Length: 396
Ligand code: DP6
Image 1 (cartoon, rainbow, N blue to C red):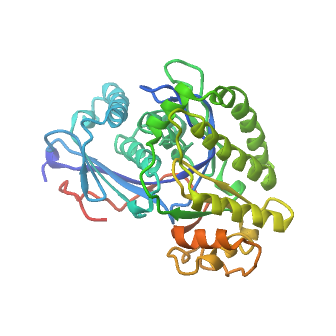
Image 2: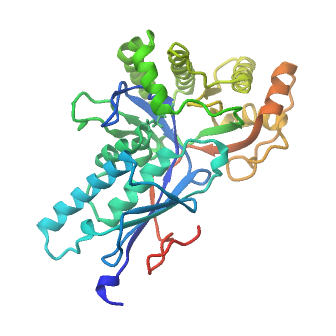
C-alpha cells in the first residue's frame, strides 16, 4: 500500500451520563453555554455506550461523513457537528505547523462510523455519549495532547450534556462566566473508585408522543418561566455545593434528597414555561410513588428518582439496598426485558404489599424494559475499528 492510501484510524467508546443537577437553559445558544452548572453520574459502558471510529486518509475524497447505527447522518448541515470538527482540526493544524514531519491529517476527509449498544427505540437520549465519543475518537486520531477537561469544551458545542461524558464517576459542568465559553467545561468531582457502589435502575416508559426537544424546550423556559431565574441564580449554585459535599462524604441521603428536589425543580420550570412543557406522565408518577414508598418503608432515603426530557425514570440506589429498591421493581415487572447482566442478574424479586393497586397496574402497563446499571468510567480507547484498513465501514 502506498503511503497516500494509508488509512489512519482511532476508536473509542464513551458513556451515557444522567444528571442529578439538571442543565436546562442556555445563556448563549451558538456556543451552547448554560444558565447554570450541572452535575451527573457517568453510567457503566457495560450497559450503555457509543462506539465510534474516526478515520482519515489522503485518498479519501468528498465531504466528511458519519454513519450512525448503519444510517448515513447529515453532518454537513449540523452546525454543532461542524463546530466540533472545526475546533478539532484547528488543534491538529497547530501540531502540524510546529512539526513538519507530521502527516497533514487536518486537511483530509474524515470518515466517522458510530454505533450504540442500546436500542434507539429505548428512547434514551444518546447525544451525550455520541458527541463525547466523536470528540474523543478524533482527538485520538489527531494525537491531540488536550486533557479530557479541555476536550469537554469542544464536546459541549455538540451537545451540552456531552461535555460530562468525557469523564467517569461523578462529573460537574461548570457554567463559567466568560462570554467566549472558555471557562464552561466539565471536571471530575470524584472518580468511579471513590463511590463505586452507586447503582442506577432505568425504567423505559413508552411515550404516547414525542416530547419537546431539549434545545427548543430550554429556550421556551429561559424566555418565559418566572420561576427559572431563581433556579439559575440561587437554587442550583447552593445545591451544587451541597451535592458535591455529599458525594465527597458518600452521604447517600443528602445525595438522594437533592437529586429528587432538583429533578422536580427542573420539571417545575418546564410546567411554568409558556406554552407549558410536560415530560412526565402517569407511569413516571407511579415510579416516583414507588420510590417514595420504598424510602418510607426503610425509614430513610435509600433511593432517588430523576427524570430528563421524557417520561423514563432513572432510580439511583446503593448496591447494599438492591433488594429493597430494584427487587421491588423486579417483583412488579418480572416479564420485562433487561434484568439480566452484571448489575441486574442477582437482584431477587422483593414481594411486599406496600404499593397501591393503581401504582402497580400503571407500572405494569407502562414500563417496556429496564436497564440495570451503575456508575462507570470515562471513554476508553479500543482496538476494534468500525472502519476497515481500506476505509470501508464495518458492521458492529
Ligand atoms: C434534561 O445536552 O441534550 O438531559 O445542549 O441542546 O444538546 P443540548 O441539550 P442536551 O440537554 C440535556 C438536558 C437534560 C438535563 C441534563 O442532562 O443535564
